Image 1 (cartoon, one colour):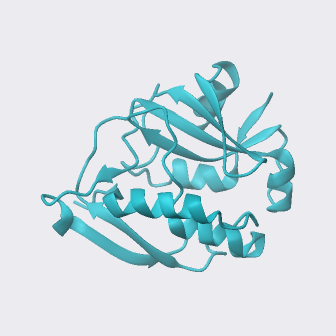
Image 2 (cartoon, rainbow, N blue to C red):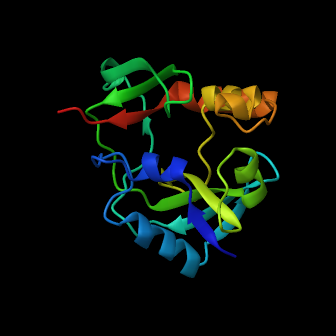
Image 3 (cartoon, one colour):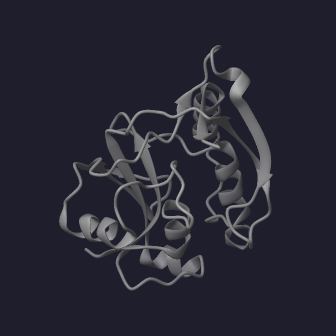
Length: 187
């Protein structure tokens, strides 16, 4: 099985200039090579048949993706309308500003099949394409954000995958994301 970093993932996981909340301590090429030689600890089913999650022990210096929202940090919550690419419409996002979580214990690599990548107009020369990475303290999936579920339901033309919303999964996502946020460092 061959795995490749997609263009979408490469720009988000290895941005230029580098960001502290992206993949740390490894080049995109070394990251991809690692995925092709080291078997995952386990493989989880994703939100659709074309999606798999490979759970790896973190071999990088990448920090946890999310931080619990507490009374001590709630005042650091920020929000803005942002798009993940030039082709997508901006959506409301939020994050904790200037909060730095610990280095993650696990990297959960989100993979889409070659066929799905072709449907989304990004053909790859591999069986699977990396579309994202969840850096976590546990070997379990972090729920997809509610807005990502909605974008997926809108279809490929709006930056999604065309998978309808699973109402139960959406409720679980809201429950998680009401208590957690992504983070950024601006100073």
